[in-house]
Length: 269
Image 1 (cartoon, one colour):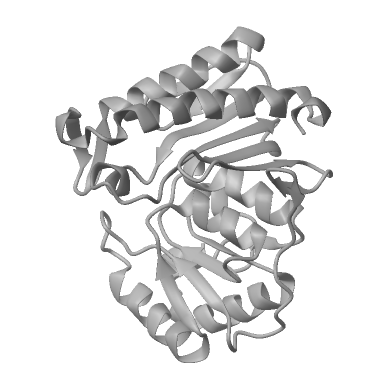
Image 2: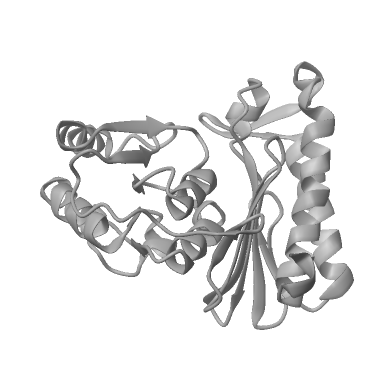
């Protein structure tokens, strides 16, 4: 499969595997990992840093002029190509030994998503997408589910754990979704949740307050698997707002309609 990939996607896969090896190496010794708190319930470990350094080193070995936007080291200036990196999406899960985390790498060209990798090193699952070329899980083509309504579907989400300013609105959204669907799952890794929408394990997903590195790769996976990604109002500002809805076209439309009554002006913007 790798030989047929776009060269930039190929290097992203190599970078993700390098980071994944670091994550697995430290996983059995999480009690010894140095951890600091960036904000309330927002942790960063030495593993995040080492995995991110490995990714950037791999990418810059091939494309030294490319810009970088990474969760831990921030923005590195460069050309019109920008890599958006989360070396460990699901840090809290990882530090507790909960096996739900991944590496997320996306490439933007002039602010348009072009390449995406979400890698689960525990399950050896490599989700990839190139704009206009579809999405894959290892060597299998991905497609979102075809459910026409909310009835009987499984939805992913993420509970607020740092910013509680929209907590009441979010709980109202959960109540509405619980009543109309088969269930809601909160796994703790938005990038994997979006990859699961792309592969049909989840029928839809929504979350508030994410960062670009949480969303970028997963968003391209969903759209290349035939799905739709938007902000809560159905627009295209999710990279700026961090508020996102994803699913097949009909599920997405139904979720937008279901969540609309709970949107404040701030969430609708």
